[in-house]
Length: 151
Image 1 (cartoon, rainbow, N blue to C red):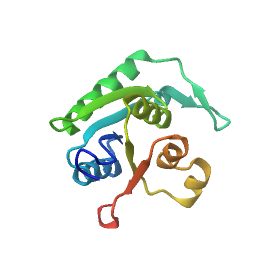
Image 2 (cartoon, one colour):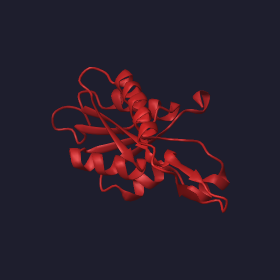
Image 3 (cartoon, one colour):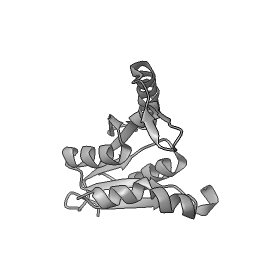
Image 4 (cartoon, helix red, strand yellow):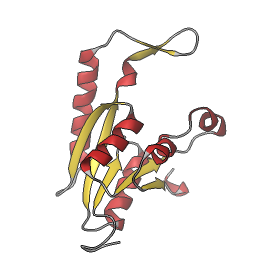
């Protein structure tokens, strides 16, 4: 999968600054030398929502200042992760949709995402973002789990 005729030349890596996404980025860098890598990060706009008494989520008064400061902090963290020759793209919205659409728009050959360990009950109710990306993407998706010793 390396070289000019390799299958994966443009690799989009979903980054959420967690240990699992850092590990996924490391795996992409090592496994696909010479590929063009773009780090995709989505600032989750839902953080400006507040839980309602019925257990759902009610959109709060949109706080552009809060979202802007989150975006600025995320942009600094993203720049710190990037290595020479890599690109970054920062979006706002739903992380699953954002990563899938940005990767497709860029013309990526592969999406690489880390998976988070979570309890069975949590997984039953919400599934993982990685699973949702696999389900929605028309591109191949490589999911990477952090080895147990690093978890």
